[in-house]
Length: 176
Image (cartoon, rainbow, N blue to C red; front, side):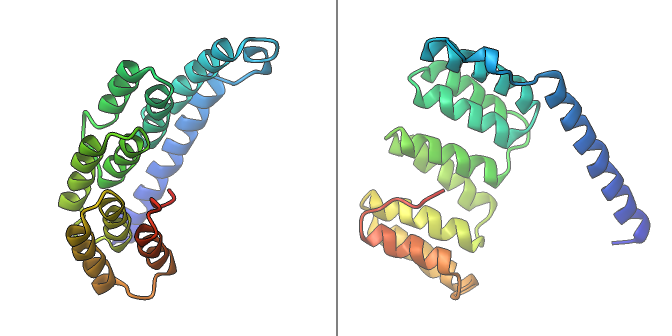
C-alpha cells in the first residue's frame, strides 16, 4: 500500500472515530433511565439509548437486536438483526447473528447464518472451529469434523480452536 493510500485510510478511520464518538455523545446514558424504575421500563430506556448509540455499526446493531430477540421481543429483534445485514453483510455479522439464533435454540436459523459465514470465509480457522463446534453439539459429527480438519489445516497451534473442539466433544457450545 502506498504512503498516500495509508495516510488516507488512517485519516478516514480517524474521521469515522470522531463521528462515532459524536453520535454517542448525543445519546448519553444517564442513571435517571433506570434508578427507581421497574426492570422493564429501565431496560426499555437503556435499549433505546443503545439503539441510538449503535449508529450504523453492524456489530453494535446486532448486539441490540440480540437483546430484543432474546428477551422475547423476537419481531423487533428480528427487524433489527435484518437491518444489520441489509446492506453488505460480512462474515463477522453472520457469525454473530448465528450465535443469537443458537442461544435462542433455533438451530435451523443459526445453521443458515453459519453457512453464510463459511461461504464468505471458507478458510478462516477460528470460524471453522467455532462453527464446527456448533455442528457437533447439534449432533452432526461428520460435518463438524470436516470443519475441524479444515481449521487445523490453516492453524494447528491455536489453543482457542483446540478448546472449542474439545468442548464440543463434551457437549458444550463454544464461548463467544
